[in-house]
Image (cartoon, helix red, strand yellow):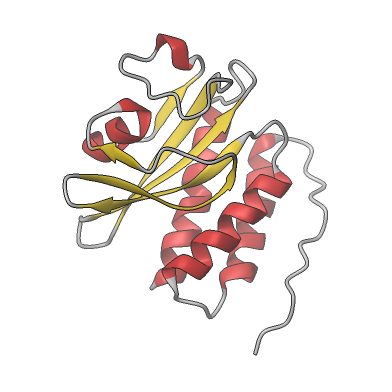
Length: 165
């Protein structure tokens, strides 16, 4: 039985270093565990409690023709999203990270939280090319996310997918 995971305070001076430290913590937190729900829950909690100005973060998993909400941190979320709809659906369909500095400017944005102003979504693609789902992070701050955040979130998601095996 594993004990409690305690993440040390991140001391990074810039975003790339912050994400490298956080990815190392993700690896430690998920080490030896392959359960999707357990890892997704702990991953969401770690990111939510580490990164500043995050209002919601969590997973949407592929199911049928769309996405269904998985473990997350923040206010209650939309339960189902059609593939291709909103930022999450666009990431699922294109298999490319979506960086949205102003969600009001994104065509067909779905407002699960009316106060959300910016978002980054990373598709989670298995080694066989199939879609597991997407990792979604929102902020109430306009332009909260930049390219460093998008690359950092991709790095975190790579560590998450590796933990699943």
